[in-house]
Length: 165
Image (cartoon, rainbow, N blue to C red; front, side, top):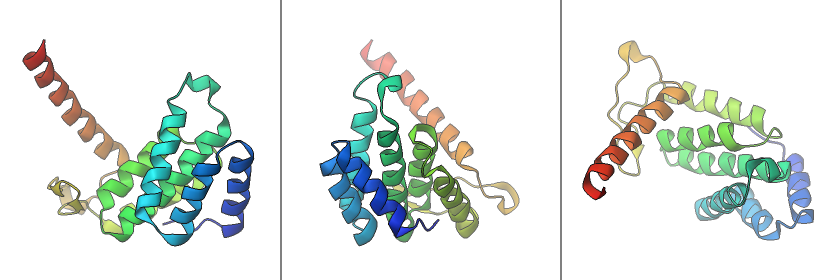
């Protein structure tokens, strides 16, 4: 995972506090400096809610950056627990929804996890073993993983429509 300077994180959390994000800053600090997965998950969820509380154009950049930092923290916890697929998914969300401040760190972390794991075949996930194989040991990129998850979700939605409508 990409090392982010402690001073950068502390300065950013001060900025978040000044923007009214006292609860987020406390959770993020505990997650970042204590490697606390529960705090990382809570910070991630809180930032996610702020991003979705109104029109996207009205979301302050500080909250997009806060989401990026929470993605880095949560992905780090997943990676340490040998859950590479979850780490990659969280980082993918950071690429899509996060702000610019920690973007290079997210990109670096994505590459680091992919390089460290090689392939996701047999990686432990929260729902069991990830069985997707890749030809000749080629590691999947995060977009392939995202696409497969999208296809799974689309199939579930189609089944739900047939059952409930």
